[in-house]
Image 1 (tube, rainbow, N blue to C red):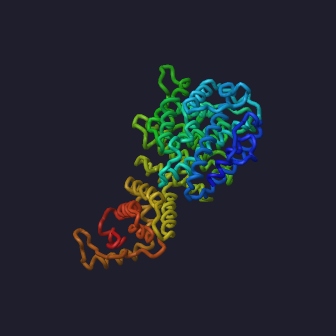
Image 2 (spheres, rainbow, N blue to C red):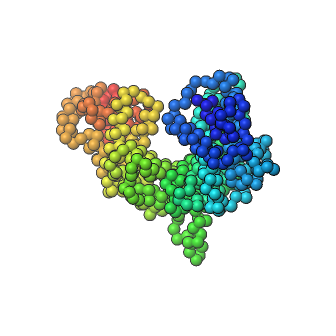
Image 3 (cartoon, one colour):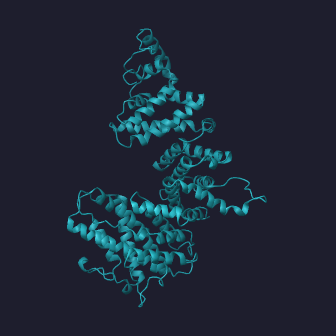
Length: 536
């Protein structure tokens, strides 16, 4: 599969796709741009489908195939790089005959990339012919897919392979991630397309920026640092984020970049705040002080409000991507919060706006998994909520939906009948959130306790508890030694939670035990009576 992908990309960029792969050439000056665009579109569509299916073979490549694949990948990446530069500015990287020439070295490629990026004007796309727009769109799309494919499929194989010969001592995506290309992606990101029917080139450029900075290898880490520290990447992202009337897929891609940088480069949140402050300077008061704080959090909250409250009603049909956008914004808010210094804390008005949207999301019916995923993102954000949010959620109907999430997540884990690595991510956040809210508000504590230990079962439990305590079997301050819970019928919520107390994943059982301990009023005797000495 990997060999076929490498071959097919070379063919898509080749003047004669019927040639045998061993004699492939890259004479693009003989190939009309429309033909390249058509070939690339098919390659892009095919690879995107393969990546979505995720069914690449894990079988190790034979040595001779690995040598071909590595050279083909390097050649393809370098060709993509030169074609993108040529599509943006043919005068920078063209030969005497008007065709495109590849840079001989990565250093030369970086110089050419920087020259194109720094000379590119903001109205580049407006005056570009339709065929050239389509070609540039497919080239950028191919570059993004290429970096994703290399990072997800090829690079892990060679990193973990026991093969002695590593064919990628020099990363073949170097030119696509160089400083000049990163600046070019950023500059295209905030450009306007000629018409609404034009290819969404800024979106493809945003995807390239994300793929160039997503990963932990040395080259990608360096690219990420360059975006934040050397080329004002945070300013470009803020400009793109605050634009009005953007297509949802483009805005979603920009948000992914914001979330990724804030999560991986702590300084980026403050830089984005500073960039937003610069945009807002014209609204400052006469004495130079802003009337109210408006930074990255406020921009994200405004985008979240529009995403949830715009028409058609959220989450829309299956093609509507607003649910993905809402989840991305919520994850971004979480990343900003855990990285932020105290002086950047949002205002009370902003916190109220967040609370309104969170309650709106929590109270949505679970029409499909998209809504449930949004609710899980809400739960993650509530991990860092201030204590007073407990009362706010209570007053606005947000507690019962959170308990419903706990029920659903607990049932899903129990139904699997065995522990899995993702169990902790599934249930620990909701357990921690409910425990935190219960400790902060007595009414919330009672609501959760009544759902776990229903009132209609309490009379029977109290009778059994009285009988157990009168046996006078004690262990220190614990006045009961029943090995099993006194009242936990199979299938009930309390039965499921008690089962999770002995789950093999340590974080799962710890978080469940802590919540039940809170619901039992931190009373050791009550805890044993309800959960059993064997589980405690």
